[in-house]
Image 1: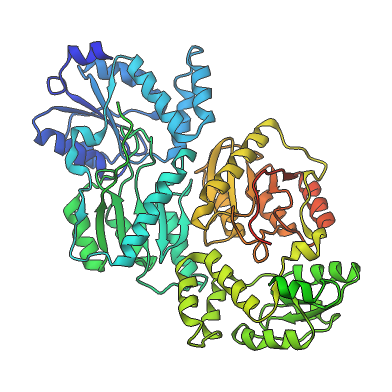
Image 2: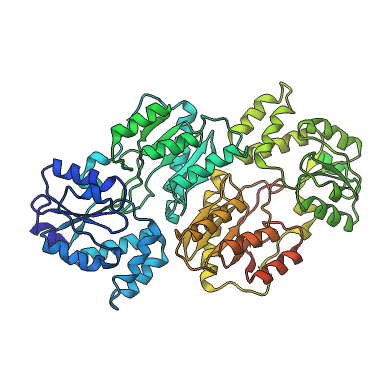
Length: 295
Length: 295
């Protein structure tokens, strides 16, 4: 790895971007090219948006052929590779089908034993064994990171600040169980913890609990708190927020959104801030003293 | 409190049972009378089952008049009081309406700040200030506690045992956040964490994730793990299981149910075991070294 890093400086080779769904792949591709670096996109069939990738050199791949694609990336002169965009997490399990050489099987089986993080870490190791370097989207396109501070017009109240602190603390506590990028805390009461269902489903659940009268905490109280699990490999899976998050938070009757500053990504921060302002929600990048694990 | 305990031995005075919904109130009343102690039931309007309480001396109460009812219980000669049965947790917040004397208000407000446990602890303290002693249903009717061991015909596999250990550990870890009587773990992967939604809703979520293909772990893998939060006041709120739990666990495609032995209650253990056997699920009372709080 150190040999590879010495061979090719980051900006002298095109960046390989493996693209899942959503707005992030093109946001990252634009941000990287704005910084003067070439990109080569590898949109994943069934996930990536054809229109978004059309403006960049690209070649469609399928999750089931990722091993072969890694060789293509090297042939295109790529040295660094980024994974970005939505690929339904459990679908990564389909990787089982690709790297099916006997040599790798035991390690893949091992990866499946330990939930997401272990799986991703092992995939990263395999990529590096192919002579590529896995980098985080936030490293090549830092513009997508949510910055620190109160970002919109609405500021959190003292009660909101206490809920934010409790949420960040809960996320840190359950991180060792490989869960919990997001929780909902309302007036010191933990309403919901995200595990396999995803943030949107968790917020819909809070909205339903309120609708059914099973949560009596008044509307406008409560916070969605998001942050990376401590020890999470940020090259693969930083939590993301977007205007749809704002809608779901508003529907859940919460007061606002707090993400760990520089610990979550958003494809278009200005649009996100406008959406929060329009909905009357606060949007906060909360400082954290927690350290990331890194490449 | 020690003075009261000295005044009246447990069996010399009738036991006051404040009854919520479900099967537990009558199960407890029967178990206590079988042991030779008289009972006096205070079924809560809108929650308790009229048929179930009809066989015992009783007087209907409303949540909003609990303070007055406490005086009635003393007049009936009761010294010990048990709370048992379903009362939708947030409905306890309606207590706000009853103990509205100025003297108590600050303490009630304080109770609302800290989630369930603080609320319940403060309610318990108020009851004791009325000269009554709050006891746990499991103390007067130990027959309702789920015992240790493999209780039905099906035994957990080694993988199930590992999932059970991980689930119990997660419950212990998040207990300080006043959440998590139940979690679902499948092949070392945490699929769901219960917060305000309740166990049935959590299991329905797992079933839906499987149906939608968002969880690819094969059917028949995974465990519902339930146990009291560490530090939970067991006089008020031990987790409960029943035949409906078995149905929901089967629908979620899990392999079985593990509860902390003597840390969960069931109204009819034999019926529960038969239901698990019929569904082909294991039912386990898992030993725990964790200590309970409280008298």
